[in-house]
Image 1 (cartoon, helix red, strand yellow):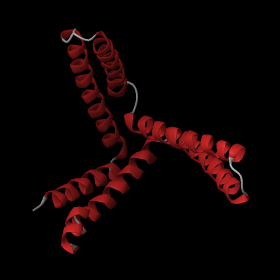
Image 2 (cartoon, helix red, strand yellow):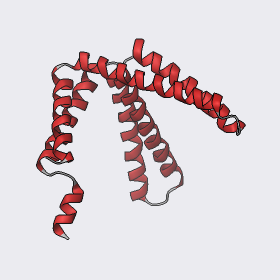
Image 3 (cartoon, rainbow, N blue to C red):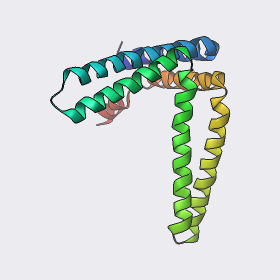
Image 4 (spheres, rainbow, N blue to C red):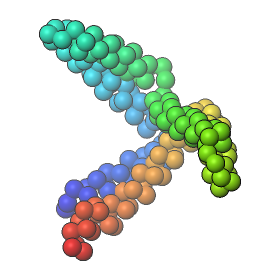
Length: 170
């Protein structure tokens, strides 16, 4: 059995766990993400303390270590990581779309470009609004991620990787 099939089975299992047990699996993933951030933070702090040849590397490594430790502890004990990370990602995407929409309205010439810019602005506003809703609903986010994992797992099981398809038709 090749790695694509194994990954497909693992994605399906993880997706089913997220769909059927969203609260427990979301909390487990949050603890897992928090634990890995704490380990990374301790490693970055250790590197910042040990490697003192470059002050810029030392201070940035210590700063990244402290930030990772703080977020790791927050994700482990106080905050669910999935809604936070999911919302943060879509906030950034929504604000970027709004920014480019406003830039396009202000600086692009032509009715088609203005229409595309207005559409981008509207979609950005909708994404930010939906993100505000989803941030308060960790169960929905876990189910959405689980559904996408199931779809991805089925695709990996059925099709495999795109590299094997490319090799087949060359």
